[in-house]
Image (cartoon, rainbow, N blue to C red; front, side, top):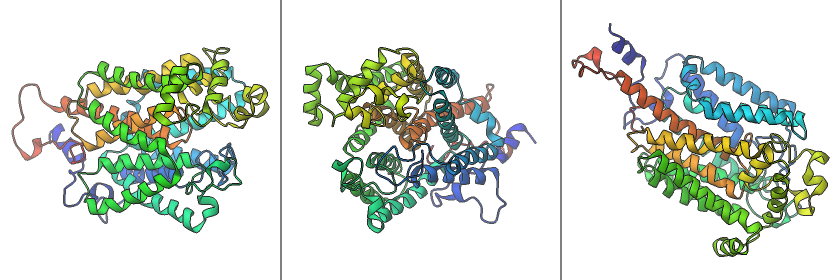
Length: 471
């Protein structure tokens, strides 16, 4: 038997159009395989992100900082989840390892260095470990599967459960599922948040799910998808999450445009230009009347609902520690050690994060860290897209949209390196998914003989692992 023949037998058959869930279910009656264990791992991982009240803690309270450090039990669950994921991916470690290039290694290394100089080193180290656990889990979820199209079916199934859960909280337990006038933010009273700690988290998950639904628009009957879309849109509106809704629409348009470009440099420059404009509109409003005028015209609020006061304080602090920052995740929510508590105004003291991911990154790990973050989160995926020849794939479009949505959310929220923040982790999913297409195309090219096509025999036919209808 030839090597090509052996490889073709080890690969699963392509998913048929008449049975689209075959990739997830597998053959009935077969013994569990490593791939089945990976399905269980992904389901457990998404459950922690979408179905728990606060992935970073355990609290249904309105205060986003409540229970921020979690409990020993929740921390043990995260450690156990990653351990199970590593075990379930034993036969795919080489594929996972290829995702760790110099950009991610430099970023992680620099974050570790800043913990030494952190305002609270103990908190900084613990939060870095938690962030790495969550990031590694998403790396395993996307790159560990043999059949990448299975990821989309698992997400769709989890969407159904997530939508049912958040509506259950809204109507069956409204004291937990709806913001109350007695909470930390009385202005949010009446807005839906479902099982999440805050309506912003709920709105971001709605946007992620809408991206998923859009990616499956040509693959699933509209009659099956329409109820889910309607329910998510209603929740979107009732949560008052305007920014994620606008971003969802803009990022879908931008991803469609970027997939038509063949230059990685052009893709990178367009993304960086968009991010620069976003930062000009937001951060420049702190010091510029013209920027405030633009913000007033674009969103109707030149103060960005009070965020400008926080940004002014953070910009001042960033000039004191421009290259190292306060240490990884060692600025907010560390008690009296935080300059926000000792030097900030009432509005700054009440804040639990900066509501601006780029500025918060500078405050945490300095301009050095921001540059390394952009290398990983902008430069790497931009040039990876350049290397993908066949881009007419709904699943690739989904990953690009996840990536862009995570990037641009940081204009008014802080999700970069956000531990178990769903928006940050699905941004990671986008970056990893894009790189996976590059690796699989390279592997497919390596299988093509240089001297000409092989004879058309049964043993010589090779079925590529990614050659499914999702692509």
